[in-house]
Length: 247
Image 1 (cartoon, rainbow, N blue to C red):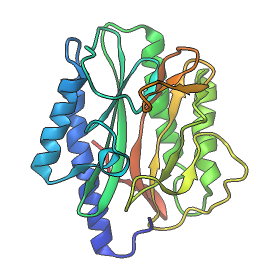
Image 2 (cartoon, rainbow, N blue to C red; image 1 turned 45 degrees about the horizontal axis):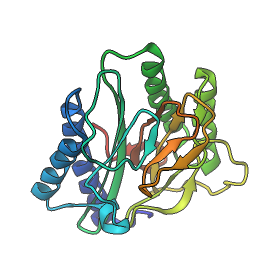
Image 3 (cartoon, one colour; image 1 turned 30 degrees about the vertical axis):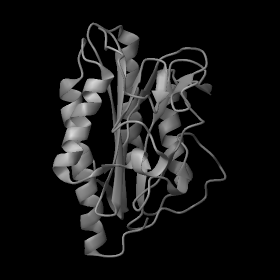
Image 4 (tube, rainbow, N blue to C red; image 1 turned 90 degrees about the vertical axis):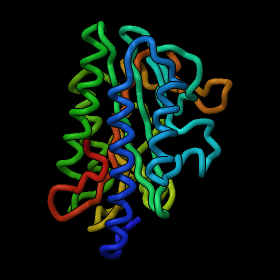
């Protein structure tokens, strides 16, 4: 989506605000002893309060209000009876529809007591997102975002999960352009004013190869290595991008 006026900007801002509120609540409630179903119930309650809907449920029939993935699970984890444990690496991914607009964001929570590598992997994802913000602006190309993310991951000694990418968003979840988290020389699309993008470094401590679990939703690392996910929805500008889902 490319924003064409104040009303559209207000629409995506509002969707982003709801995403931020839900993620803030989920991060606060993510602790050892809580089930993923209990976390999902928090998201469902807040969606109802806001008059919003879970976009993955709306668009794809996802069985939950939020995607909650643990350790080797990368994305699209289905909430259920699983109980969080000390040291788990928990990915919280929320995509909201409100008033015909959508926004998407994810956070990684590393539960204490965790090994240093887990914390470092989560730090790497946040650093990769910050680096991507330096080039997610008018005058750059889509491939520059991937190069920025991959460069940080390489410096930290981690791998980009290449099967999962950022994307355009706004009126539905996945719009053009695809925004890889690695350098793809063929992604020559220019970034222009008002473009709405979901930028999401998805990194792992292993090879980066993936497989789909039998539930048909949960994507995991093929080698069982840890994965992290940090995402925000942004608006491209001539200068620093507007982050719609910032805390």
